[in-house]
Image (cartoon, rainbow, N blue to C red):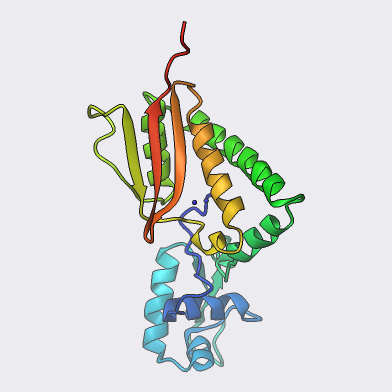
Length: 226
């Protein structure tokens, strides 16, 4: 039609901002580790709400808890700072980065598509090397599922017809397809080429066979005559 983000939540730049995100951002951007009351004032929240979210963020490993002396003879005040993981949980815009990189591919449209397909083929080979599978068809189905393409298929181990078709109900690169349709689909097609490294299976990507899906067609390669 990708990168390991681990388990650290990354806010969708176009999505809603929830209160826990706001509490984490307030801790991350504070000039000194803030207290619950300081966070509550900066966000116009009740301290009990801040305390609840801070506890969840701490349990998730995104912030750490410390203390500083209270005023006068009072008890020390609890403060919070981001952990190494929590320090890098701000806004991301990988779509913009990908769009910039794709727009700089040189040459004509055909040249750009050929370059993109080579890139995708190298990507597919890396995936194939990391995901052993009984055969190329199993590898394709597994990889597409793990990458978020949502292939609709039966049990990969079941008996197959000479030609298999998978409908892909999602495209992880969908937002890039419209301005860079030939390039993005060429990357995906090349990735499928790279996944079928056994040479016994051919695979074709049929883009937008319906408004909601693309189709992958797989078939056993016919032996050369003679």
